[in-house]
Image (cartoon, rainbow, N blue to C red; front, side, top):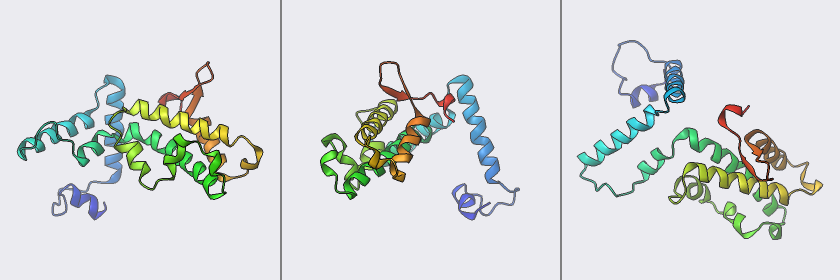
Length: 187
């Protein structure tokens, strides 16, 4: 196993057998399976308990928001989809910008041109929960797709990637609005 993993788990001086990345992968798979069966997220619960313990040891007020706790709360599984959709949408908006088509970018999508936008939209948006952020990412991706409906964009990789993400991650809901595809149905 990589020394960095061993160091992070304080195993660098122990000879009690090796711990492989396969072991960690299997552990994560079992934790995920358990969550699917019971609805209990063991890792999130453990992280919340650890965060509370550390805050108590450090005499930090309960209502104090810290950068690390926001990142932990972001939860990798639920944030990966918004980040994928966000990244693809950002590339398409940047294509519009780099080709001099700024007038095609509506004001609600201009945030994609800011360098720090990813952290603001994905990690530090306190007013929205993960499902709201995912739906907003879906709505903005569809909006960019509609803006790029002219065939001149169809040969660009950024557009083709946007179409692929839409086809793999989203479904129309019957009223014409797109919603995130259920996790079980994602290819």
